[in-house]
Structure formats: C-alpha cells, structure tokens
Length: 255
Image (cartoon, rainbow, N blue to C red; front, top):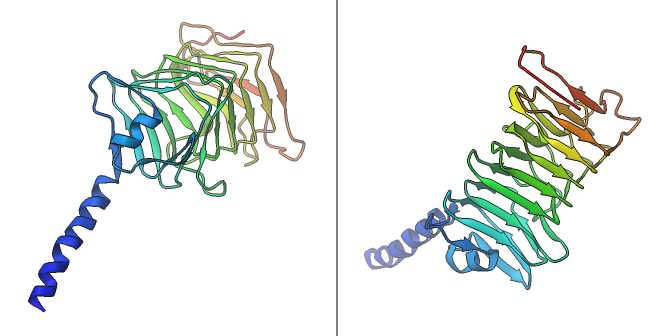
C-alpha cells in the first residue's frame, strides 16, 4: 500500500500542476509579436490547433501590454465557454479575406473580450460571434469591415460593443442579432465613436429598453453617426434605433 501511494502521488501532483498551468495563459510581455500558431507552441495547451488554420482556446488568454497579437491569415479562432480574452497590448487583424473569432460550441457563448485601457486595437475583416460581448476601455480602437453578431450580456458587458471613452472608429461593420444594444457607452463617460457605413440588423432580442445604438455623452469630441442602415424587428417592441443622451449634465456633441 505504501509503495502504491508513493507511485500515485507524483501522478496526482502532476495532474494538479497541469490543471493549474492551463488555468490561463499570459504572453511574456517582452515586446514581441505573436500569431496564434506561435501561441500553440508556448501557451501550455491554452491555445491548440485541432486542424490547419483552426485554433482552439481552452482557458483565459491575456495579451500583455508590451506584446502584439497578429492575425494575418484566414483562420478560425474558437473559444471555450469558460474562457475569456483580455487584451492589454496591441491586437491587429489583417487577414487576406476573412478570419473568425467564435465560440467552440455555438450554444455556449464564451465569457467575452476586454480591450483594456492603453491597448491598441486595429481589426479588419474579422467576424466576432457567439460571445459575451466586447468591453472596450481604450481610446485606440478601429474596426473596419468586421461583423459582430450573436453576443449576449454578462456581468461586465451591457451590449455587443461597450465603449468607455475617446474617439474610436467603426466603419463598414455589421452588427446583427445581439441580445442588447449593438453599441453602447456610459452615461458618465466621454466616448465619441465615429460610426460610418455600418449595418445594424435586429439587435436587441432581449427586448429591453436599449436602442441598437445607445450612447452617452461625447465629452469635448463629437460623436458621428453617418451613412448607416438600422433595421429593427417589429417583435422587439421595447427596442429603439438610435439614442444619444447626456442625462448627467456632461458635455455632449453629436452629428
């Protein structure tokens, strides 16, 4: 019995250690640029490659402040339902045709995405679907020719894309089928998004008092909403189209 216990103990410790190391992965913060393929080799199993150009995230992924994540190929990045993405550094998406960031199981949305204060986000041709929404705390955000769809709210997000402050750029982006607002900002914030040539299609399936574009004050900048298409669902009787408010007396400008 003693011999058996001694033989089993290293195995048990090894299993516990393996579980701990896979609880999350943070990039080294050494100023390097990584692709998802690079992360497969160094993330300790948090990022794997089930097939060619298909990647699976099984636990929380954190991009450190000095590092860059680059998507420069047409690929699919699937995220487990218990996992989240936190970006403190630079996140660039520039695939030749299109890349997809989605849930590993379409019926189980992943926790969501946070663009932290100070991060730099430049996303092109990226479809972000089936998650817990995107919370953006940075004023360095550009989205172009992207799709943001089928997001539900969680403890930290109140819309598919929740903005904090600054002049951010949203151009040729399709928002469709999200639970609450497609884009929102706080009533006590100072976000001035530039929303152009985008489509808002039947967002608000939760049928609450949240317009598809639901913005608070802009601060000293000016919010711009121009050349967009906003289409609702008649069944969502509580959902409006566009709202801009400054209920707390904070400065706001909108075109």
